[in-house]
Image 1 (cartoon, rainbow, N blue to C red):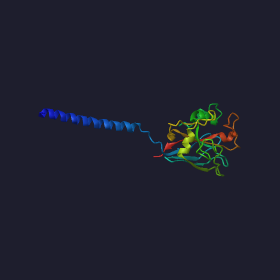
Image 2: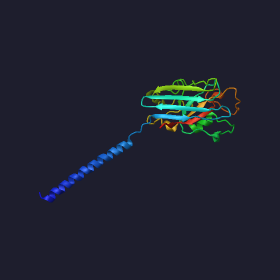
Image 3: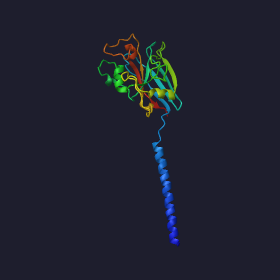
Image 4: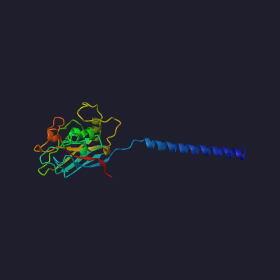
Amino acid sequence: MNFIGVMLIFISLVTLISCGKKESLNKKFVSLEIMPKKDEGIFIANILPLNSNLSSISSGKMKIIWDTQMFLSESKVVGTDPGVKHLQFIMSSSQCPSEEDDLNQDSVIDMNELLTVSGDILVPLDSDVSEQLNGIDYGPISNEMGDYIYRRSSSRSDLLNDLTLPDPDFYDHIGKISENDKLDFNKRVVVVLGVSAEKEIPQSVKSFWDLPVELSIPIGCGKLEESK
């Protein structure tokens, strides 16, 4: 074989090796792009007042820890009505209502009006956060200063298993997610309910579920955002 033939074979081998490396690198890049992104993190919501003509939160914060093993929710709320039970929910939407969402213009955004903006209830922050319906009647009661602290946790697997079960009631405004969905806490808001029974509430305000109307009035809402 002459010199030119040897060189042609050598160039062909180098080209094949180079193409193989490029193809391998391309496959790696593609595989990285299609890998599912992790949704773990620490998420914080600053809770801002709603319906401050009936009750006001002077300050409030919700913290969610979501990792590979655990779900933990903590809240500290200051300046509500004393001695009132406060239900708390993580909603399916990323938006809190504004004054424009008072559809019947009675100066109160009730829970039914809030649902049209903030979506269905996803995680009730009650006595058992591992299941949506277990312990759902529980809510922390504010002290004589109108303050309360709440803390509950669950295993990640228990929470996700319950959230991906078939929905037993499509009309209770408690939603589910599919098995392939992530919780995406960056796309959720938290809501706090409950005012004193002594407040003068317009008759046009609708209650929620079978709650007394005063316990179903939203008093605070905040968007969860990942803590950097």
